[in-house]
Image (cartoon, rainbow, N blue to C red; front, side, top):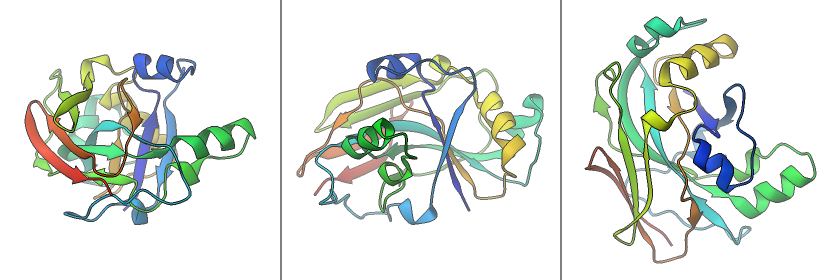
Length: 202
C-alpha cells in the first residue's frame, strides 16, 4: 500500500503560500509508517516548531490500474473519506530554500490521518464539501469543485508513473486556511457535514 499526495490542487491554497499554480499535478508520497493509528492522538514532534493542519479529500483505490483513462478513473475508487496531511512547515521551508527534497516535512510518523471510509465509487459530477474544525471553530472549508485537477485527471496522471494497486490512498490536496496546531487542540474533519475524523493534539 502506498500513499500518494497531490500538492497545490486548490488555487487559493497555492496563493496563500506564495506558490505558482501548477500546469500538472504536483505529486509526492508518504510512507505507510506516516499513518496515524486510529484513536491515537497526534504528538507534535520535538524537532518542529510549526506543524500545520491540511484537511483533504481522500480516495482509496479498489483495483490494479496503469495508464488509466480519465473516463474510467472513478471506477477504480472503492471508498472516500477526509484526512489530514500534517506538514512541518518550518522544515519544509528550510528544505525548499536549499533546493532539497522535502519528504521529511510531509512523511514523518503520524503525519497522515485517515478518517472513516465511506464505501463506494464517487458519483460522477458530484462535488464534495470538506471541512476542518479546530476547537469547534471552522478552520478550513473547501469543495472538490474548486480542484485545479479533478479526481479523474489525478488518477489518470498518477497512473502513468505509478501502478495503482488495491488499498492505495490518494490525498487530493488542501484548500486555503492551513495553519499551526498546538498541544491541547482538538480537530474534527467532516465530509458533506458528516464527522469522519476526530483527533486530539498533544
